[in-house]
Length: 289
Image (cartoon, rainbow, N blue to C red):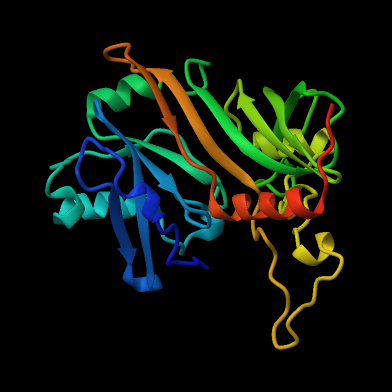
């Protein structure tokens, strides 16, 4: 079930400029006792980009049919005149592309019908550049590498993807090593295609599954595995540093389809990944190419 409240905004960001004075959009789902403060990353020219927290759906999922869906919550708020929309007066809102339930980062919406119709043709046509941060297991053999596969849904478990060289769709991601540790690696992954779970499956096939991604071979990261003299609390079990697949959609670049203005949207590193990197730098010494 949902884990709200989620995605509190750091105080250091509250004074950053925004097209709208209010830098947060607050949404809630009383039926699940859940509340979110979503940072506005971009808001102009008929587009709204929000910083999505983990464990929140942006679009309906039949496997989580009773979970809150961000797009529906925002549309509900528009229809009922919620506080966050009084200064905006939006009458239209549609999601441009989906994100995994656990993935953090940029959720992009169109707030005008003409923008929605124009921009959805950009998704998947390589006119949009999607970049993700991934904290993965393993050691990279090269500073830069590409993973080119054909992916298709698993025949028995349709929510999973797998390599299928005969019936799969071509999938390509390009990766750069940002930090290499003894047992883990921080990667910047640029997607040349848009496929379900593509970064996760590609990294798994490369022998570097994302930390915390149990669906694709990743394991939870515990401080006790890094710190030799770690002492756990006897009253409660140790919690993982990251309780989800360590994937973050950090950058989105494209030309606005109506006025051809270059758009670059960035989302800061989430707290769980930043905290994990802090301990990795301290207890899992870096290696260099």
